[in-house]
Amino acid sequence: MPFACAAFAALLLSACANTTPPGEIGSSTRGPVVSDPPQVAPEKTSYAFEPFTGAPGNIADSLASDIGNEARSQGLTLVRRVGAPATYRVNGYLSATGNQSSVTLFYVFDVVDNAGNRVHRIVGQESASGTSGDPWSGVDGDTLNRTAKRTVAALRAWTYR
Image (spheres, rainbow, N blue to C red):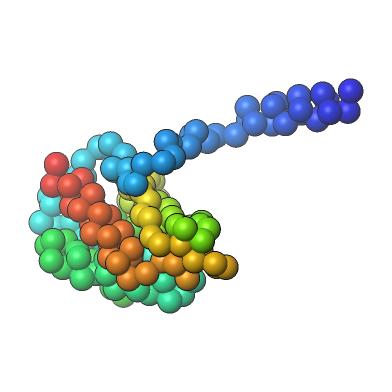
C-alpha cells in the first residue's frame, strides 16, 4: 500500500510539471526546432552567446571559440562583450555521457529575445570515441567543431528563413 500511495503521489506531481517529453534518442543529431523567423532583418541581427551551462571550462572555452570562428565564416554577427547589446541572447546547455566505447555530447541552445522569451531552440548530439572515467575527457576538438558547425548552420538557417 505505501508503494501505491507513493506512485500515485508521483503521478499527481508529474501532471503539475510544465515539461516537454524528451525527443528521440539514438539519432546522431537532431535538427533545429521549428519556430517563428526573426523579426529583425537578417543582416541587422546580432547574437550574444552567454556562458555555457554544464560543461567544464576548457570544453566551454573551446566550443565558444569554434562557434565564433564558424559564425564569422557563415556571416553571422556575434557580440563578444558581456552585457553588450544584441538582438538575441543564446543560452547553451551541454552534457556528456559515455562508456569505454563511445561518448555522446548533448547540446541545447535557446535563442531568447531581449524580454527573455525563448524564440528558437537548437538541439543535437555528437558522438566521439569512448574513454574510461569522465566522459568529458572523450569530447575532443573534432566533436566540438562539429557541434559548432551544426549549431551555427541551424542558427543561420533560422535567421535567413
